[in-house]
Image 1 (tube, rainbow, N blue to C red):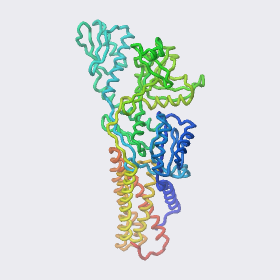
Image 2 (image 1 turned 45 degrees about the horizontal axis):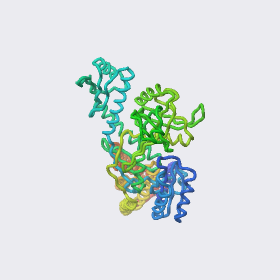
Image 3 (image 1 turned 180 degrees about the vertical axis):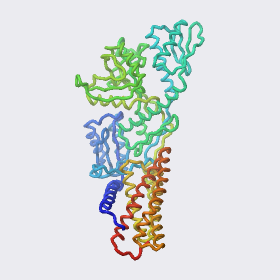
Image 4 (image 1 turned 135 degrees about the vertical axis):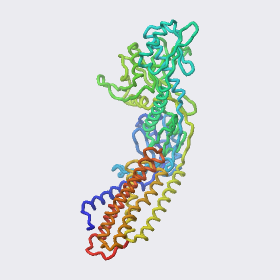
Length: 610
């Protein structure tokens, strides 16, 4: 009556073994570490490890372990004192080209990591780290949009041979002054048909001796611009942080114009600002072929239609003031090799508006040069503008094109990285910053562990006293439930926060709730005169529907919390949901297996210890 087939026992045992294995990494803790990356996320040179080792050896600083993870180096230390001392030494030795960030690294053994074992991801409140609240400058985004519209109007008028007095920004709109009423009518007709000038309100206005048009961007288009700029900035920030290897970052929207950035494990606020500040904008500009850049740099006389820039090598370059395409119109970049020549290249993809502007420019400038300008806003107001690529336009192109003439595949990869991760649709500034120290995070972990332990022990004691042997079986299932819950959190990479710990504490109580229903049902069957074996079977069978209904309704509530909640609430919902699933398994199938092993093989059971 109370026997499981062998495959069920084997299934339960397998799940417990696998769960124990993937819960093991959480026992090994973390090491104080230094994470070293290039300022722009470039590949780490082969000789950098030797430079770092020599700098540490001079100061007699010993590190525990060293590993290379993609485009970053990670040095583990035995103590926080060694970590801080090494950070000061390496910042001086490596200079501004590299970011030396304080971090915490999991100390899981290599053999366990090789088999996919990893500890739970701890949130900022448990692990420590830095928190930034960033404000997106929407006024600048609107201004950039108006500047693009001004350029588009001028280009459309030139292409149609319409002579105009001026086209300029005026307040929150644009004023176009034409020479005649006929030119004004033609301009309105052109603006109605041109795809790049859709979504504009155009009205005739008095302008003295001239014929004026007032152009304003529709409110709906401005709202879409704001939403697009915010989403693109979030994507750019996430790409940039991921490229330089910061573990488990949290980057999410808050309100209509703000973004929250959390970097768990990073303790140095200044270096974290550099990581965030490394996001930048890009511009494609035409090279001024008519004037000499070296002469302009030596004399200081720059032509009125041009601007003087410098390449990374220090070589001056004269570029036209008129912008061709900006970084917010770039939607993809990847490095590779030219199939015809075998030389390194970067493939770039633009959006619809950018593609049209690029096609119009390249169609009229075959044989001329075009430059990519990288603009980086450093913390403290320091601004860097440099030309990262100059290439000759070989043929007209629009949405997709290749940049060639690069020295190496490494340079192509670096350029693709800057293009991918450098395009902010609107400037951003940090309006709030917080640092959660590792000691405070450790205190939170200790308090959370203490709360779970106290609740766990009280439940164990109550079950053992009130339900005797069956209570001990429920306690065993509760241990298994905790192991499986931790294993699932580790395998799924879910971030554990203080609200998540609250969900675990609640799970501890709910896990034995199912057993309470089963055991009370067994007692009721015994009081009705049923045999012990029949009472066990009836207790599990008849209580199942009640347990399922109660857990499913709680699971629905947890799903709604996860769907509509923010970060901390999502953490609570995740641990609660996983806890419900594991408790259903351990409280019903797990305890039934143990009860079957204890009582199922006996022909006669005189009394149950319940």
